[in-house]
Structures are given as structure tokens and as C-alpha cells.
Length: 79
Image 1 (tube, helix red, strand yellow):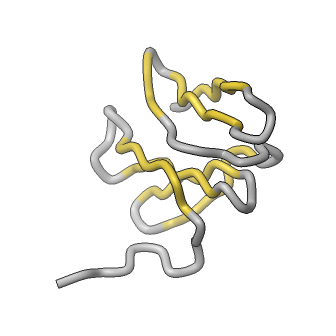
Image 2 (cartoon, rainbow, N blue to C red; image 1 turned 180 degrees about the vertical axis):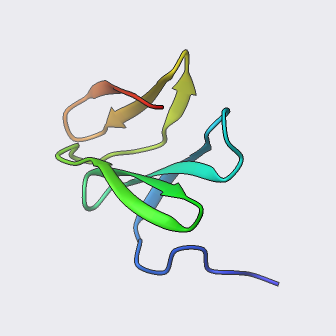
């Protein structure tokens, strides 16, 4: 069985589960150029303005977000 977690999001590229909470995850949307937090089914936009936001990773308390369009990797702290 497949289950749609958050139907309003689309064009997702990266997904990471928060190592501090199994109910919280982060996803990137490469079309909207944004990083979203999904916490217990609630969605909040953490950061926008990241052209071509691609696969993400979590390391040392930060989310790494590649910007494919700008050939950069941005860091975003998470809590």
C-alpha cells in the first residue's frame, strides 16, 4: 500500500529524516527552490530562494542543500 504523506508538495528531490526525531523530515523541491520541514504531518517552509534545490544531506546539525542552478551547496541549521 502506498500512502501520500503531504499531497500539496511536488517536484521533490531530496528527503532526510531528522536524526533527533523520527516524526520530522526535511524535503527539497527543485522547481520551487525550497527546503521544507514536515513535522507530524505539518509542513513549513524552512528556506526559499534556492534555485534547483537538489538532494539534501544532514551532517553536524546542518542540512546541506545543493543549488544545481548556481553550482553551490548551502548550509541550513536545524533544531
